[in-house]
Image (cartoon, rainbow over all chains, first blue to last red):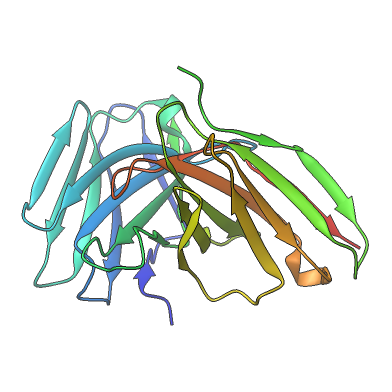
Length: 115
Length: 111
């Protein structure tokens, strides 16, 4: 049962354009969402998060949008840079749970930004 | 500020053996979580420790066990290794219910 799903295994964009990475979830208990970036041979690096009480959060070139009714979130990167090329993971947490803030991850999307 | 560190970087073990992986949490963080990442998949939650107590466990058998020490560093122990245990093991530290910061991982190969 894949509770967090990233349907696009890969995405290729031109430098300077917008990258849009998508994520869907099924568990209505999820109330906190995060995006991580992962380079080969490194651990995931935290990028940006959003609480379910918001529908948008921005940090520099990165913006996350949350549509609770559709159980969908997206990460926008504008403008995209070659250094953004990495695997991007969507993750979700149910902070109201008593069993700790475990993260449930999607399968990841490989983003390639071409110069 | 020191980030999350893990040791060893790589490890090769034989089926049936036991392994211990280590993690030092980021300064000031009292919560450590462990994840298993198989090839081509996202990380899967194994368990979490908060102030030396297990604070949540994922769908992993009892042969996966852990410890957290007073300095908040942590160990992951896996007994009776199976071929399917081959994966990248990630440790993440955090304050409770805040963003988790990951170490570089330990690549375990079981032959």
